[in-house]
Length: 196
Ligand SMILES: Nc1ncnc2c1ncn2[C@@H]1O[C@H](COP(=O)(O)OP(=O)(O)O)[C@@H](O)[C@H]1O
Ligand SMILES: [Mg+2]
Image (cartoon, rainbow, N blue to C red; front, side, top):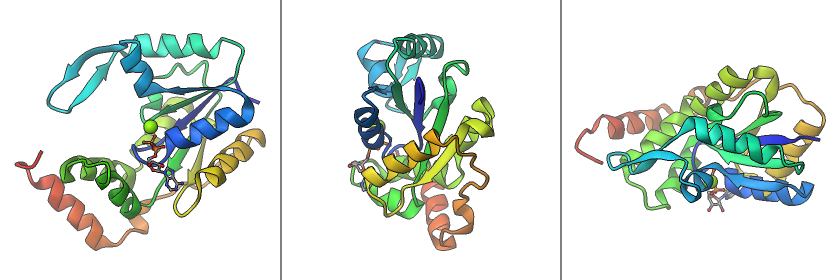
């Protein structure tokens, strides 16, 4: 059905959980890109300012290409799909989550308001989706709204869309659905320079 399926989306939308289920269902291998980067040292340095690794894109891309050439189907979870080699990616499924729900989910990870707001704003603005479409083309990208749905339901919808070669014609735009007061609150948090 596929050699390399990418499960993409903003942190917290459920990529790791969904990728695990899909890999189980198809007897494939699950790769969590951020875990792979750390466990195999595929980064340039650790950025103290952002508290995250600056990845070595060329090595990550090469390594994933190698894993995907192993014969088993591979399901890659990442919020950074555009670092992957265009040639090996069959399909990118971008998981979406209502920003208000995402806010609560990221907050419960113990992240600061600012870090939560940055990620929620990325979801509002469809950043991961846009990057995936720019890199892989709209015909290779499908989207699944995970809001109010179980991990299994989401995994099934991804698999159905992938197996049917579904073409996504309409994509979510949270800007039109989310309460303007919530967006103002996000902007307020983001404009507060002192908070880290
Ligand atoms: N569809 C869902 N419904 C409810 N909770 C979910 C769902 N998907 C993921 N979660 C929960 O949200 C949290 C983040 O999920 P995770 O798979 O780690 O997301 P990601 O890999 O995108 O950061 C986990 O606690 C997970 O159990
Ligand atoms: Mg994850």
